[in-house]
Length: 196
Image 1 (cartoon, helix red, strand yellow):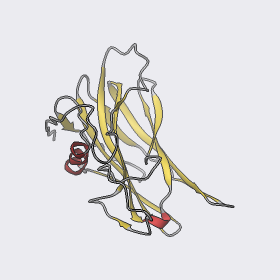
Image 2 (cartoon, rainbow, N blue to C red):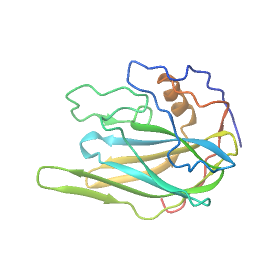
Image 3 (spheres, one colour):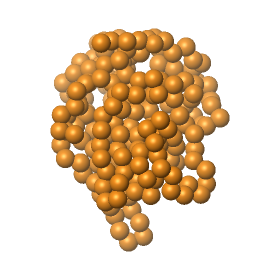
């Protein structure tokens, strides 16, 4: 089922929480005849002290591939709010997780999220999580904007539990809070994951 909502928000405005997300066009060559925008979030829940930062990778039938960082350089909640200092060990919940929202302009067509890696370095150790293979299909609309879902890591002692979710309302509300503005309606196109 496709649903849509208009985001009528001022472009380029700054919120009190920092610079708002913008449409990322770095994966385009400039020769694409058909392209569209996908919106999705990468988030962290669970106990903060177990959290690692990582990257979510994707490939497209058009030949485009890349990865996006699942967090900002300075950790934030997805609505742009920064945690209080010192952070302590908050329990991160799905309604207000840490992470970020992405808006990517890509060639129109079929793509998949297919790899997630995370790591953290201490004074003498490095912790790395290489998640087992998975496929989460998504479709880039021709000339439109689509919300394609949420990749979440729930951090637990010794590892994490991953999931792919529909947080359409939460994520678009978080964009609105940050004065971000995809143009036009945002339809919902959530793919069915395999291997999670």
